[in-house]
Image (cartoon, rainbow, N blue to C red; front, side, top):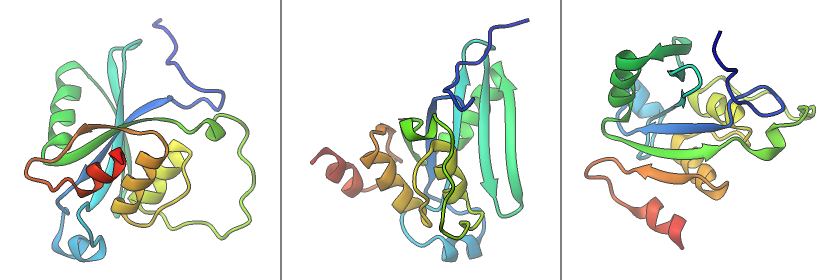
Length: 157
């Protein structure tokens, strides 16, 4: 049997690559997700088991994929094509026991699902989650080809 996957105290992997798509899957999703970024999902490579873990929440459901070698590399390439990519560590407050929230539950959207996975406050739009990730220490891995750099310039200021 292989090595255990490194996790934080809550049992979650600690470092993720967060992918912000610039294109929506459908025309109506493009209308709903106004802004530069239309969808967000994340993945991480787990070297201990030589595979990748993918997390993608869509209108049709939430998908978790565990892929190895060529299949993992292929899906990473598909996800990262024409996308902004950030690397982020799970928020330290997420590593301990979860405290009860007094607010109403957030809607099941790609943004709220990824924010919860990362231990960040929920955001309703991918652009807002992108800026929130940068504020919480994310580093820029890739900027979509031909994208303006407004948010990236702000993050360096």
